[in-house]
Amino acid sequence: MDKKSLRSGYNFVERNMLGNKIEDIEATISIIAFLRLLQRGEIPPRQVKVDGLDRLLLRMQDRDSSRFLRRLLSEASDALMKSGAVVLFPVARIGQNLHPKLVLDGQDVQFYHIFSKGLRQEDVGYFRCPFTIS
Image (cartoon, rainbow, N blue to C red):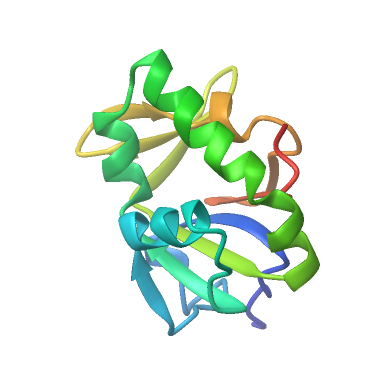
C-alpha cells in the first residue's frame, strides 16, 4: 500500500498514521518555535513537522487566544503559500461531530474555528487546510 503524500498547506494527521498510511516529515520544530518564526516574518523549512499544536490549543480555549493565533497564521499565509511549504501537525486523535475536533487525553480540543476556511478531510485521521484561513 502506498503512503498518501502530504500537500502544501496545514496537514493535521493522527500520529499513529505517520509513516504508515501517510508520509512523515523528519524536520521537526515545536509549535512555539513555529509561531515565533511566523511572528518575525520568517519562513519555516519547506517541509516541517510542528509538534504541540493540540497541547497548545488545549490551553488556549478562550476567544482572545484563538483570535491571536488565527491572526498570526493569517498574516503569514501569503509567504507560506509562495514558499509552497508543507506544515504537518501530528495530533493524538481527530474526532468529528458537527465539525472536526482534536482529542487529547480524552478532552475535546476545538480547532475548526481557527482553520475553518478550507479545512477538508483527506482520509480517516487526516485533515488538510490551505494557508488562506481568513
